[in-house]
Length: 617
Image (cartoon, rainbow, N blue to C red; front, top):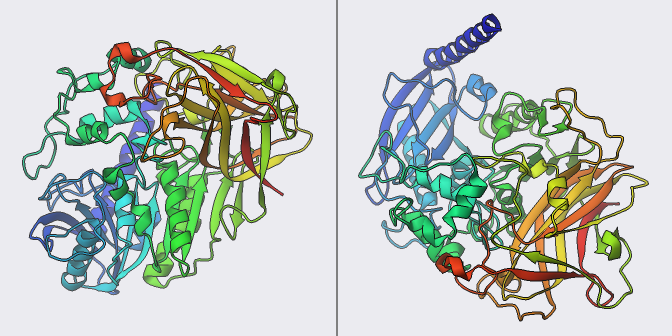
């Protein structure tokens, strides 16, 4: 075994060195700074093909995560979004955004776009991109006058931000898992519910102190970690305690902004880039993953915003069976208990990403991709559509009924409901197991652990007599009452496998896929935002209220013999912070403010709770 390991390590090192040598042998590296219109200098690293027999387009990534390696003689192992584009040869550009790593200035959280710039002091990511592109076109020899941008996650936001007020040389942009609207659905909050687990750890390393340009940040804001995140955050008790002496202690500007702005106020609205994606004519390739725990919302809603506000667009959507950024990996054939039957990342890189940039930046080949190219889980097929969602997807109501039934028929009973007690001291965990960090497989996890809890209600269909394919957005419509004045509502759509489901050979002893409750999609709504994100409203105790909200899109087939299940609960911890179940500013809540609440989910003729599914006809 040791021999095999060393052999594999030797091969890996050989391939790594070979790739690094390719970059060094074929590209000349320039480290420089580019001055923005307000005088701030942004550190920029440029790789120019040594072959001067042709002119090359630029392919750029603007990043808050370091444009390094820094220094003329330090080369990376690879360039660009994928290996084929590196070998195609572009002028690759990496830039530290304003206020990060080696660039001057102050970094802002998802820098707001300034629509009507009046002076050179009015700067944003669009103007910084514009000034960078203008300098590159004028100062780097042997370019063909065309620029493309790409990036994943935060760099995906910077790619999106290049679109409004774009430099005319920008000819192709690919925002991939882009941060888009951090109060409604990305990273920080979902429907006003704060995503505690991810943000607490991320900001500790992202919002470290910096006094001027640095090649690397010295240390995190604080030193703390745990092997059991559930217990760690439970003992922390409140969001307020995150600013205690052991943790942020008011040292993080962004963390303080998060806690200060707990409604959809001007701070969050200014950071919603979607409203500025108007009259976009630059070809765009938006990319996302169905198992992206961070920015699934961002990909879907960036595409949607361009579609609605830019009638003459060349806008394409790609959604695959990927986690955050997994389409950039060399191989992606499976995830959790899913087996996809093909290398989905390679398909994307070869058939979509490379052809997109080659066509629009080099006039090479053709780009004939459909408006939407999506991978359909369940059936494990790539599908092409002229619109997304598909035109033949119809909204079908699945009603909650007595005896835990999910049915196409509305109940005709009166005063029918399911009831549970939501106890903040014993919140429903988001995953089954002990993890120090987020369990990345929770978006496809078996939900039987939750179904067994008394504070989770379950509704399911009979066994399906035919395949049912969903393509598009899901909507939850709940009629509820609570004994408190606020509560969270988590709705989960689940594919229940039959008792005859086969178990993978490499599964641990005792594991069975028989009756496996595989999560397909889930989302949370902080109840006080049920009518308005800007003006939260308290519930009237014991009064029936309607809570409607959207879950992110799906492309999934429930196979014949399976069942469709819905679970409803009021905590999802510590993925989402605990709701004290009192109407108040949660960042100010004390431990004593957290109270039990009895919650009813109604399903009668007058209060027909349901989930609305986008069923292909």
